[in-house]
Length: 188
Length: 300
Image (cartoon, rainbow over all chains, first blue to last red; front, side, top):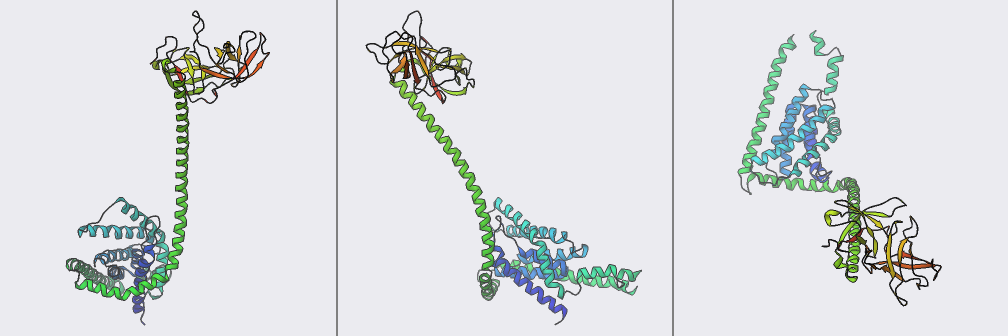
């Protein structure tokens, strides 16, 4: 099995497990009035590790799976999650994805975008839903919980995907600065 | 250098591909959204959802069962935390209820006291003396003085010398008056003297003056200046005698209960001392009544 195919398989499995885990376990665990949401965290992690394109495709697929499984309006989750995956991939190009702050604050931003984006689209679609201040509290709790889970989730996703990644970002960066194979050194 | 020349081309290609895929995905989303939103309940996309769910529902069910212990474990932690939160809430409720009970008990006690005072006022026919209720606001801490402060003053018609009673009987008289409060000298104060008599006569009531038996003793009074060979017995009731002389008007109306005889020193002698215990617990006064219409006072 080629490395690329293996990565696709791992990513697909990761998506399925994430959605199943989210809807059968995590969504039922209410902590301080809110629930953690693994889906944006995993999409973020995939975007950070695999790049913008893979992140976007993964986000779209996971969103589709989620919408289908939960009988949501198709397309909403896909649109939001592909955006998260894509932006995460772009962040990866600009920032060091190994830094602890990127997954941490990325989780906060992704969760906020996910929750608020979903609400905005629902309103745009003229869905009548009762809105109360509790929603704001739940959003904040979810964001905090996701920030707590961000680093462990990122580490798990990374350990799952790294064997299939064409080049581990860390190894690639280390090689770029310390070995003679570095393009920077070759350019001198 | 060749590598550097190729890089922008590869980069552009990669970017174009990325943007194309992104655009395709976004368009797909919008198409899905529009189609799903516009179709009926039995539409194709919903059929896909139903079909897909039929496939994945067993997986979900299996996963749900398999993950139940994990849910229970986390739930247990959650319940424990909730229980701790409940304990805090219940403690707060308990404290609030305890305060409420204390307030209710105090209100009940006040009610009992005021009711007793009212009953005494009615029983002794003191309504004509213009009784005015007052709350005790302070106690003189000095051992040498037996005084209390009340929350009624000159603006309420209180004047110096007015008798003060409580539910059990006589308390004292008003010593000083300000606009909103007054100071009352208790009958146990060493400056106090109350014209008194026994309630029963053998053959007629024994007259005397009730005074303090000693500074700092709130439970003992002494009736002096009794006629020689007068017959007083233990447990006799002592009440105010009222005015006996046109020249010297008593501050107190007649028949206010003062206390009960506890012992008699040198009975029958000229120097006999009749000790009595006041009916009113003068150390635990909360409400008193000032008789404002005795001896031509203002009254109601």
